[in-house]
Length: 78
Image 1 (tube, rainbow, N blue to C red):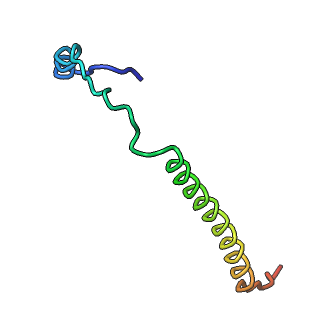
Image 2: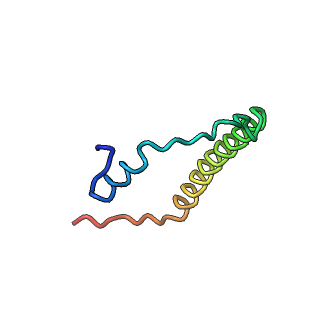
């Protein structure tokens, strides 16, 4: 998969903006502290783990309910 202009309009846009400079590196301070980021990541991972554990338990319960509700009848062999 190639990166770049694919048609005439894209090529013109690439040529037009190839030399543009953006100076937005004046403020390099993060809006969030590393502790806040780690706390959010921790909460997200705990939620994911709890979801997986709950879905595993639910799968076991559903399997048990389905197996108890199943009615097995003997097949007549001729």
